[in-house]
Amino acid sequence: MNRKLEGRIRRLEQSILRKALLAFAEPIRAHAERLARTLISPRLKVVTSVKLRGSTGIVKIGPSTEVFDTDRNGKSVTHANVAYWWEFGYKLLGPPYHSKKGGPVIKHFGSRPSMTPAYEAQKAAGLAAFETIMRDNLEQDVAA
Image (tube, rainbow, N blue to C red; front, side, top):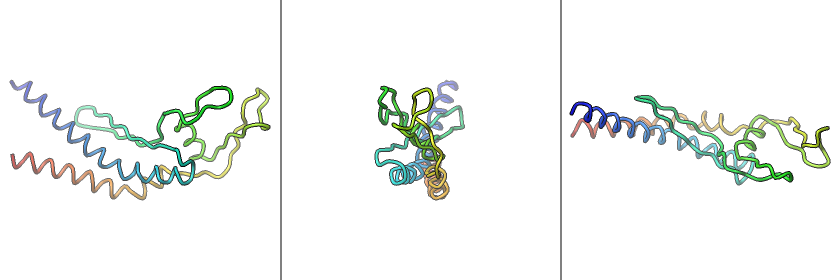
């Protein structure tokens, strides 16, 4: 009986933590996507993933790994590739710019960051959302 009760408490705890982490990440994700779509490409997608281990969790916010486009050689280019190149200031140059091996040349230019500015601008709103979810759920548990 104790084991079942402890398992139920752990699942409830993880459920609440998952909701709170997603609430924290949402304003940052939305702001990062707006910046990325403005600075990089109107098609760029930013996603959130949550990993829980016991009573702790990690939330990751970043570009999607879905295929963004394919190059002329049939290789896939993901949202993450495109976002990385632009975030840190690299650009692929197509024909007539090729390396000696025949592939495209990567050129460095001014970076256009979207993730760090989004985090800095929205971390207070994310923390407030996290706190609200945790407080509401704890108050419900105490009242019950």
